Amino acid sequence: MANTLVYLLDGKIYINLTNMCTNDCIFCLRKDKSDVKGQELWLDDENSTATDVIEQFEIIVKQHFTLDTSRFNEVTFCGYGEPMLKLDVLEEVAKYIKTHYPGTKIRVNTNGHANFVYNRNVVPELKGLVDEFSVSLNAATKEEYNELSQPKFSEAYAEMKKFIKYCRDENIPVVASVVEGYKGRHLDLEICKQISKDLGAKFRVREWIPAGY
Image (tube, rainbow, N blue to C red; front, side):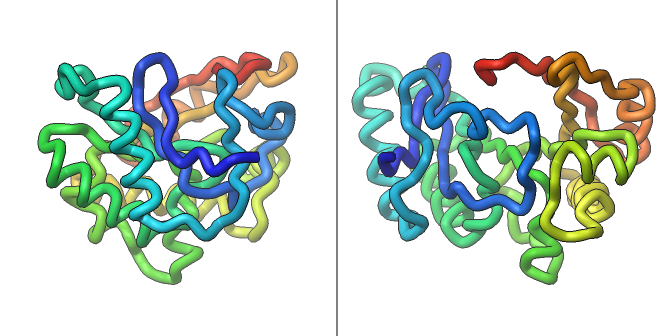
């Protein structure tokens, strides 16, 4: 284990805020691996602050982008857990990036459960900080979602869809994604695509591969 809060994947910067999650997806990479291309993403603890994240972020920038910081134009909050469970840290880090690296696109990969967790609509406070959400739709029905995503509360599927609509209402671009082909299992992609359209989201199919990337 190691406190890898910021890592590179295919030359792009990713931020790994937490290992906590409100889902336990059966296809999640972390069920089979502790690393992404040799970078350990299981954290030692959940006590890291925004300052800790920013320090690692700057190390990555200096090591890989010192000569030309324009070579990175996107940062994604995505790791071995649900980044919105560390909302305060995410907001502070996003503000830092927007201030010091203006023009950088910030994307958040999420399961869309944050409003349930915090008992309020958090989307408006992220406007201007997050440029795009990628929300895990994962299924065409609640029953299929519960089977694949193994959520920790009963109305997770409905909450996820409401989160997508709130993003649309705030005019924050949002993509609804599904994992297709897990161990030969296939989703009804046409229904998933229509759900995404009805919610105001773009639709993305992520082909399942054992290594996860």
